[in-house]
Length: 265
Image (cartoon, rainbow, N blue to C red):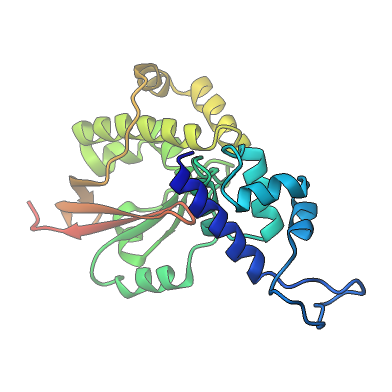
């Protein structure tokens, strides 16, 4: 870790330590005054499970680059948020840890956005495991009824390789492009959440039941589309073109797809 990084890393530790309130031994927050705000170095080192000598060198910018385990212990000791923990890891010269799974709850403001666009354009939200979390009225009219009661029924990759929904919606050429993209994005999901039991089970299910999936999976493609123009068949309006833009909420790993309608063909 370069010297300038060690200096900033130490400064960040000092600021976090100064912002912490010492706990009263009987519970609650200690009200007695100290000469300096926050915790003592010994108290932080105890919380993190490291020696006070090593912690002192970290604050002073004199210690070697900390390990990921040390960074995780410091993040827990300081009670950092996900964003603060990511910042600590970057200052320490390490990539931030990936979350174990996407968030399951959509932001309330995003749900209001979906409802507000009911009469304007279809909008869907899916997570980093390719599970569809929500769609507005216009998207439901366009996409139709996808879901049953199975464990993978809300998963886009599962629907793509196990139902005839895509052929009806996109036609043969469009559905083949989508299958290729679904396999590539599913590989990204597995690489980000390698220990996710749901994704591992889905991989086993698709491998066992879908020759099309096995063929596309063997191609080994990795990728994600962030914009596209798709020709889609609306159940009541016939074929139409949509400009599709994909926005990402990185904190929750949610993906918002906006379908802007163009002139009908």
